Each structure stands twice: as structure tokens, then as C-alpha cells.
Length: 324
Ligand SMILES: NC(=O)c1ccc[n+]([C@@H]2O[C@H](COP(=O)([O-])OP(=O)(O)OC[C@H]3O[C@@H](n4cnc5c(N)ncnc54)[C@H](O)[C@@H]3O)[C@@H](O)[C@H]2O)c1
View 1 (tube, helix red, strand yellow):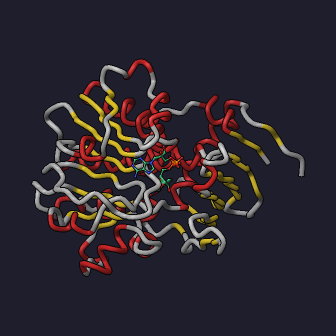
View 2: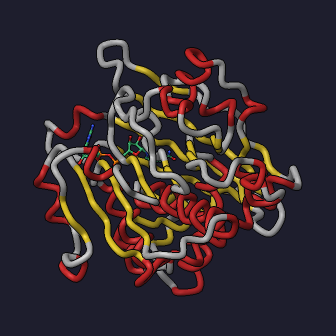
């Protein structure tokens, strides 16, 4: 069994386009129903309701051909302990024999998966609504997930990224903005300054309830990665709601669950990422409306990104072989 840690993954340094392409291929495998992904169980702790560990098993058939599980812990109280909030281990199993092939001990794999899914949505959005001017992006929350999104955005959009306004409650994290980007990345003092006028907007906070209640820019893309930042008022401004998996995302106090409870949003009002990639799903929404993507995070994508890194590690001779 191959053991990979953060250092190994960073050493491989795979380009974002390759990771995004892997997510796209996985979506096609899902459209062909060649996958299995049971609903995630949440392990909760009654003394600390904000903490959880989630089990995310999946089998992805077709050209990915891998099974496995991600076991991911989120402990927001870790910030006070000066350790990262999220920790995760991904195990990959041979889908023919069940034999464990790899253990990836790193939250980085989960972060790369998350930013790659966002990258795929950007590519799909641009096919239907190409941005003709420079892209003005806004982001709230600049922890590890926000930082990986910045890396993805700069590689994917290149010079077309005209500017990025970032708001984080903790100004210390802004030291993680790479020096070469200082001319284009601006730190702002409120979510409103990051949000107003942005034609690409991302939430990467650990907010527990929605606060963004203003009209988004028309023809913008909202990537609601942290899932609990918008109030249901967003439905006053757009009907273009995209999810990765309705049954997963319409629970656990997400903005989608609140839209469903307070505003009657139903699964059939939304389109899924499979619809977007395989059936031109974005075309059904009015062109001027902002598109809002709500990804709960799919185990199938973790297994696909894990197997990409595993295969690349094997060919590069990277990682540590563990004895049975
Ligand atoms: N949808 C998905 O597939 C997916 C996958 C992975 C992570 N996530 C989510 O992404 C979020 C970010 O993850 P992370 O690992 O970077 O978390 P983190 O806790 O390490 O960092 C979060 C950052 O956001 C800042 N922040 C928190 N609340 C804020 C607010 N209201 N306004 C501005 N800044 C705020 C914090 O200061 C911190 O710098 C988490 O909510 C996590 O659950 C989603």
C-alpha cells in the first residue's frame, strides 16, 4: 500500500487543468450511472455541536476505476488550539479486489478536489456566459480552501483575472497571498466590498448562518463553497440554483436547506452538476441572472482526485510503500 502525505502531494504539483479534467470525467461516469455513493454519515459530538467527522465512501467506475473512502474531521475549535480545523485521510481500494492500494493522509487532497469542482463550474459557466471583460472576483474567507481557490483561479484564468477582493475576519491569514499577486489582489474590510460588482464570487468561510442578503451582480457566478453564507433572500434575485447532489446539500443547516424550508425551493427547481456538464443545464436559466453553485462535496470526486495523485505518484516513484 502506498502512503502519501502533504509533502508527497505538493511534490507532485499537478496542474489545476488536469485536476479539473479529472472531475469532468468523473461527472461523465456519474451520468452513465457507473458509480456508487451512499449518503454521508455525520459523527457528531454532543459536547461540541460544531465539530464533526464525516465518512465519505464511493466507487467510481469507467475510466477512473477506483473505490475508497475519505474520513474527514472538522473541528472549528482547533483554531484556538493553533492547529488546522480540517484533517482527513483517504483510503483507495482496488475496485476489482477491494485490496487497499493507497492511504493519503492529507486534507490537501480534499481541498484540491473542492477547488477543482469550482474550476469545472467556472469552465461550464463560461461556455454559456463568456466574460468579455476582465474578471473581477470577490472572496470571503481565506483559510486553506480560499488559498487553494486563489491558486486555481490564477492558473485557470491567467491575465483574464483583473482583480480579486478578499475579506477575512482574521487579517493574519492575508499573509498567505503570494507576493507576485499583490498588484491584483486587494484585501477589503467587509463582505460587501468583496461582493459588490464581482462577476465571480466565492464563499470560503466557516460561517454557521447566512448573512449575504444583497443583490449579486447580474451575469455573475456565485460559488457558495462554504454553504452557509447566503440568506434565502438570494432567491429574490436569481432562480439559477445549481447543486452537486440535492439529497446531500439539502440538510445540515445549509443555505439550500434554508431556501427549501423558508422559500419552498425544490429539487426540480435546481439543476445538478451532472445536468450542467452533460445536458447544458445552465441554458435553462434566464441569461442575466446570477448562477449560484452549492457543492456539498462529493465522495466520488475525492476518490477520483485521490486516484489521479496515486497513479501519478506511482509513475513518479513518489510516496512510501507500507508493508502488509
Ligand atoms: N463544499 C465543499 O465541497 C467544501 C469542501 C471543503 C471545505 N469546505 C468548506 O470551506 C470552508 C473553508 O474551509 P477552510 O479549511 O479554509 O476553513 P478554515 O476554518 O481553516 O478557514 C476559514 C477562514 O474563513 C475566515 N472566516 C470565518 N468566518 C468568516 C466570515 N463570516 N467572514 C469572513 N471570514 C471568515 C476565518 O478567519 C478563516 O481564515 C469551510 O466551511 C469548509 O467546511 C467546503
